[in-house]
Every structure is written in C-alpha cells, then in structure tokens.
Amino acid sequence: MYNFDLVTIFYELVIAMLLGACLGLERNFAGKTAGMRTYGLVAMGSCLFIILSNLVTPIADPGSPGQMYVLQGLMIGIGFIGGGAILHNHDNNHDHTSGLTTAAGLWMTAGIGAAVGYGYMPIAFFVTIATLFAFTVLWFFEHKITGNRLKKN
Image 1 (spheres, one colour):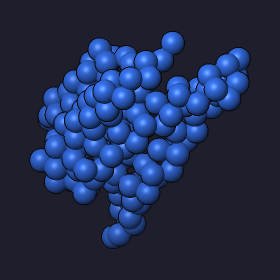
Image 2: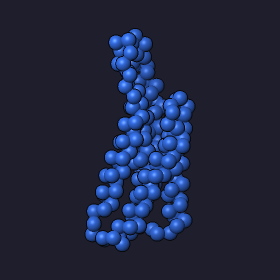
Image 3: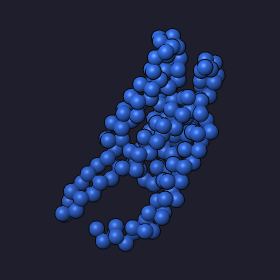
Image 4: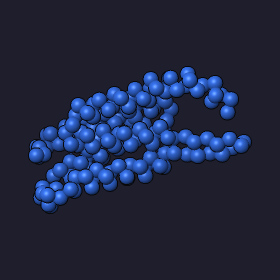
C-alpha cells in the first residue's frame, strides 16, 4: 500500500530531482545542452506521475492495471523528448548523429524518477551510479578504443 504522507511524497520528489540533477551535472561538464535542470525535472516529473498514479488508482479502480499504463505512457513520452535531443547532420559526405547518449540518459532519468516514485530508493541510487559510470568511465574507454577511428572521420 502506498504511503500517503505528504512528507514522504515531498521527500521522494526531492530525491528524484537530486538524482536526476547528478546525472545532469555530468552532462554539463561534458558540454551538453541538457543539464542539471533538464535531468532533474525529468526525474522529478516521472516521480510525480508515479506518485499521482499511486494516489489515484485505489480510488478510481483498485483492481485496475492503471499503474502500468502510467509507467508505459511515461516511458513513451520521454522517448519523444529524447527524440528531440537527437540530431543527424550530413556534411562533406559524412553523416554524423549526436544526442543519442543524452536521449538515453533522459530515458534512464525518467526510470530513476519512477523508481523513486514507487518507493524503490536503493534501485534509484544504484541506477544513478551506474548511469554516471556509463557517462564517465565508459566514455573514457570508448574514446580510447575508437579515438583514432573518430579522428579520421
């Protein structure tokens, strides 16, 4: 059963925003346009929608799969936002796509917010750390491995 305590709800919203902002801070350091505010708002917004579905579902129809519909709609909606972050350029006979990591990061941030909204704080913290690992450590290895190839293009 969901905890209807306003202090708990506000705590979850703040935690979601802070976890998202942590990912956005890394994106700021990487020189990306979607930063702390964007990531923080995506996580907090996701958390808010989950909390609202938790609050409304028992009232509307206790046996309804409404929770899953909210989560499904949330993930699709964030895909739309992420699609706006992806750019494809064609210049000098070279194709270049950018923004894929930002889009994936926004999608992950929505999942983090949803996890907080459902009350799964340990999962949200773990996924935040794992995503930061992907943004930083994997970036380093990716550029070490593909650096020479990327410079030729």
